[in-house]
Length: 223
Image (cartoon, rainbow, N blue to C red; front, top):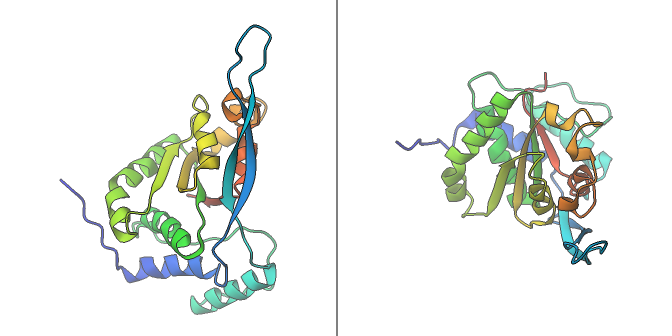
């Protein structure tokens, strides 16, 4: 059995447009940074050779005043009181249960890439069960998104502290990268491998590689 996803539901498209319009005026661009790593040592007491790769991240060219103007227009369009200022880079989209919010934020990823070139995304969820659900949704919807977006290449994975090489690939890949992680996996800095130097990420802390990509962070069930 193959599921069919309706791509033209008005209320879903309205939500997607609201997010994308926040970046109206953004040019297609990206940031670049150096990712250093060492090859395996060749003998006792010897260090491996240092090599570098190019890291690729999102780049926001809009000023806060431009984002605020976009935000106010979106709020007025949706019957909300316009904000007086921007105090952070956090924005909320509220949808009723059962309206397809997972589909909306996943499709928003592809729209943001198509319009502005953003490639790095982190989806933060409150539990392991929801993490597995989001991953399953990505698997089920993969063909649907490839058909809608001209087979645009993308990769997605569940963050695993024992597979930190995935974080390095996340940082260096030019394709859309979607990391799905639980809140618990990014907390507890003192015992979390995400905040520890690792050979698998070239001696850097994996969190620093993720931060260098300046990812768009989608928080599912933020309440």
